[in-house]
Image (tube, rainbow, N blue to C red; front, top):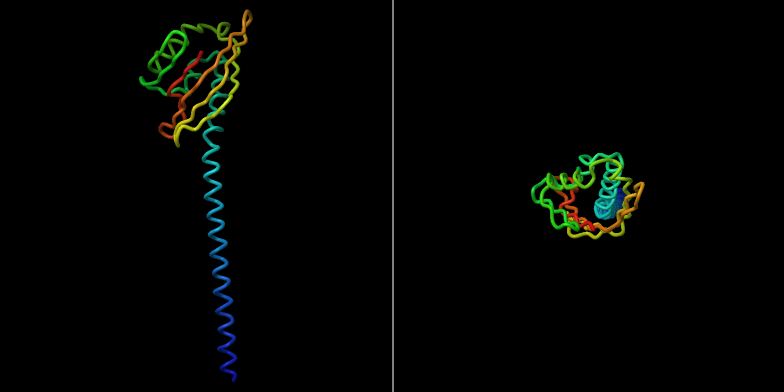
Amino acid sequence: SLQKSTIHLWNKRDNFYLIEKKMRIKYLLIFVLACFLSMQIKAQEYPETTIRTLMQDQQECWNEGNLSCFMMSYWESDSLMFMGKQGITYGWENTLRRYQLRYPDKKTMGTLNFDLKAFIPAGDAEMVVLGQWTLQREDDEPSGYFSLLWRKIGGQWKIVLDHTS
């Protein structure tokens, strides 16, 4: 009788242990799934946040009169394309020269402001950004629109195509 009650007690304890173990596994799976989903959401938000920061940095570089710094967000490649009113400029060096010729000093550069309108994912490693630019200068206030194709290259987001009008 003592032996039977001991066996019965062990069976209850084993069942309780199995139920507890199953619940722990279930909670662990729910936790892992929640972490995975959270990382997916952050991964989707991250490019926009990163690109916003890079564009803010670009704006600050421009407003300091530093075109080389402004160009740091562009892909340093001969395959970079800049399309403006005067056609297509190919390559990072040519694009920098274009900016230097068009904006030779801080007065002509003025104060740049970006108004970012839309972020459109174009795959896992590409983002299209639509926006408006405005230059505040002493004598005028030119403005226009842009569409930028950003691509993640070597772990960094870079502008590979800039269409500005």
